[in-house]
Image 1 (cartoon, rainbow, N blue to C red):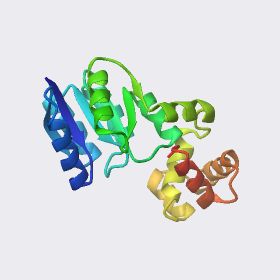
Image 2 (image 1 turned 180 degrees about the vertical axis):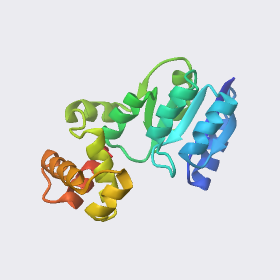
Image 3 (image 1 turned 30 degrees about the horizontal axis):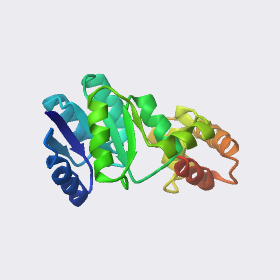
Image 4 (image 1 turned 90 degrees about the vertical axis):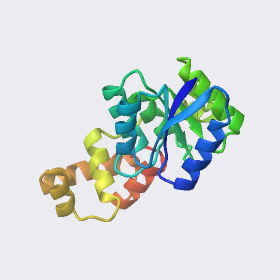
Length: 201
């Protein structure tokens, strides 16, 4: 029996996934979580065979939760499930330790098959995303540039970003300037939008 953890912030989607996978004779859902931090806690407590994580969740993203789960419960295999078919997300998820990446519009039979394959130790990738990821290359942004762009997404001022990240205003400006150049954007708002669209944030 494959023991599953489901982490999805939308209650209806989580319930549908639980019902769908619960119909499989060889699977049982042992825990559910509504955000990334809950997913990490549940993974440590229940030690499921596979943790099925949404990529965009509150508190911790699915990618951040994957990294935490891999550190705290390395025997738990993570399968990322997302509506966002962005090559940068796939690369970051795999770098964080995910064993699979499947888009939500995949047929139910494909999702169940992906869970089985990940539980068996295989790596499962959506084929079209894998090709796009290879073609797009890695993110050009450093971790700090990502942090600064993420903080700038909501229109925060340089002073606010500096305070949030415990950096000087000059350092924030340097990171923003570098990120704008690397994304070929006209300003930091456009840089954040481009980076988010490509799955780099």
